[in-house]
Length: 324
Image (cartoon, rainbow, N blue to C red; front, side, top):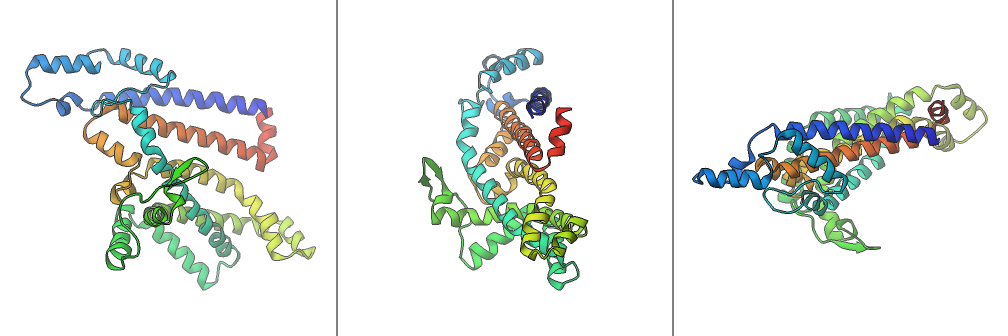
């Protein structure tokens, strides 16, 4: 187990280093932030002064080296626009994005698992066909269009739910979140549902496929032959064996919920990291863009590591192979 974890941790560090090189190089080779930050009527002396202050007069290799050294100290650069540490700006917005992602994932799992298992156990029923048709719609409909439709129906016409903002923030055990108040829940429901639709559809289809494959296995037939109840067969024997691919998808989908919540946050004016990165791209605020992308890469690498650890718990064969 220790050798397996050391191997995965080393691979994760290598991926972080390679991605930092690609992200920094890619962002710094696109556009000129000086043109966005300086008055077009400024003279050449002012332009050169700003370039020196931002450190843009140094070679790209030297800039990357300073970025790498400072990154190990927890400094991912200073925002060109706000004049504050980029990491601080992102951390201030991170709780809103994380609670939106967690709530979206919760909605996806709580509905997708029972729907997928039902569709797998009774594939010919009308309800199962309706579930699969709904999953196809969830894949097909664009997120921005669904978000606008949600606002028009539930906020404008019916007036049931608010369409923008984070709502009232509550505190529980020292944690501040809009999930702890009714007003906050009413504000987060629409954007979370909008963000969850695509993930819900993918988990439903994956759960159905896993159920259809495992339900015909000999150990399921043997469990039924022993007289076990259908609930115990499903919860003990079936669910455990379809969890490995689902854990993989859920882990990666959570990372994508954080990374690709930009559209949803923009539509619903949700004050998260997505709104910040859109503004930063518009202003070519390179330190914030690089810091945001590196944090997203870290989330994906960390989640992959967690998924690998869960693999070893759910399937001992992975642990044995890792030891070898």
